[in-house]
Length: 100
Image 1 (cartoon, helix red, strand yellow):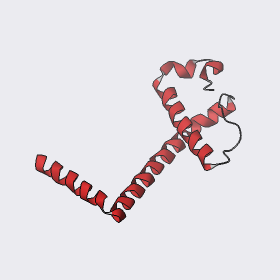
Image 2: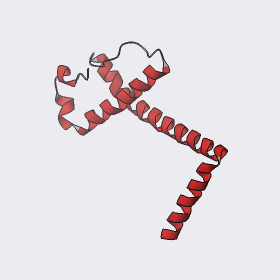
Image 3: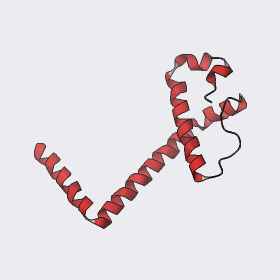
C-alpha cells in the first residue's frame, strides 16, 4: 500500500514538471471547483428567494460583474449552511436572520 502511495505521489510530481500536463491539471481543478460552487449555489437558490421575499437578503438587483456573481454564490452557500446547521435560525425574527 505504501509503495502505491509513493508511486502515485511520484507520478504526480513528474506530471507537474511537464508544462502541458501541469496546465491540464490546473484547468481540471478549476473546472471541478467551478462545477461544485455552481451546484451549491443552485441548491441555495430556493432559500435565497425566500430571503429576498422577506427582504433580508443583503444584495439588490442582479450581479453586474463576474466577481459580484462569484461573491454572491459564496455568500449564498455560506448563508445556506448557517441556516441548515442552526436549528433556531428558521424560528428567528427576520431582523436576526439578516446577514448584512
